[in-house]
Image (cartoon, rainbow, N blue to C red; front, top):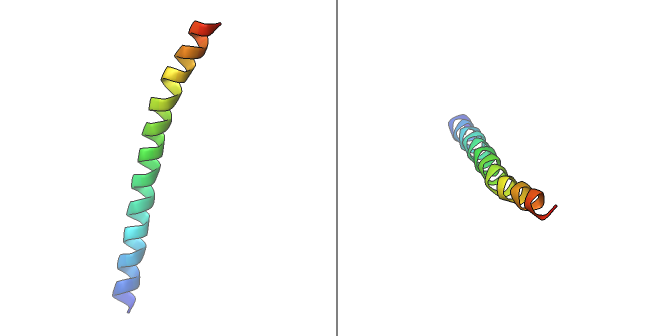
Length: 42
């Protein structure tokens, strides 16, 4: 029981870290072209 809950916590933490990394990368990828496009338009 205790071991299972510890594993679940580890997996959740890992998943959260991966999600944060992915979202950060996506933000960088999405924001840079968007900013460039805005600068080009104006």
